[in-house]
Image 1: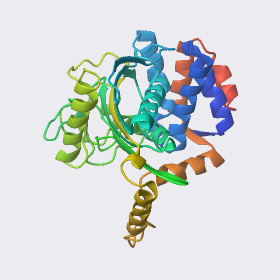
Image 2 (image 1 turned 90 degrees about the horizontal axis):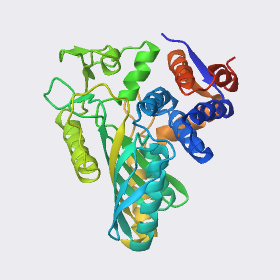
Image 3 (image 1 turned 180 degrees about the vertical axis):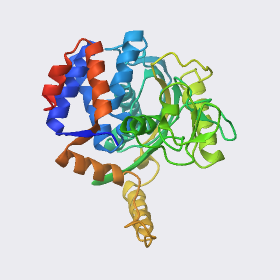
Length: 359
């Protein structure tokens, strides 16, 4: 079992901002990248948190990630927007794309945003939360153009990415319902976390480089590569294909169709549907029915091994509260990789360590 550090939130922000400055980013971009990555850690999704920085650094040095890029509009057809991310930080591109979609949905009642060519968009739940804060329902279909890592149902090697799906439902004066999941049984980043911690992958989640079941997470992280399985037999695989067709072929004009494992950049396409529920029905009636249903679901007696029924978004909020109070755990291998990434970016690793209180 790998050792880990627990870093207080203020110190972690200072350390990660220091690393992010190494990309040559503007002050606003440094804040956006650091805040988004740390928020992923706070919600318990370490797979999409600060552990992504080493890959971002490699992508930047390869030329696959362009700092200080902003979203551009390729097509404006009223409620339909086609946007290009210019291979910029997804933490900036995703926020800008959703801001455009929110403005249009508020004006017209709904909007469809087709975003292509964004570098890694991070935790997609962040964009559903942004829409929910604006009072909008949203759906998000995302493809991944990078090294293929997920096997199709009945397949023995990787053919597409973890292709997440996300949806958000706002509730006035209450926390929104946010559903955000990879179509693989586990996110690729969770395999990276397990590998760095020296922990086995759960059973029935992974194939090795010969298509055989394995619990060695290295096959999802380092060569020779295997493949993560999709969730729910054919269901996850089918939804992953749909994300590829909608987020990739339709929104981005690009799909994952190569076995190339040499590039470190991660490009995302995302098709987002934003709806103002007040334009479809009287808002209090919609929310009243929603809350009544959620109460009905929560009232189910928990079965053995569970203390209660949870609604999507609640585990993340609980993790956020705990980690905000106690600090963010970072395994020693991941922290060492972040320090190595800082050095590649021309940032003194000792200064990063000191900022985190680990010197």
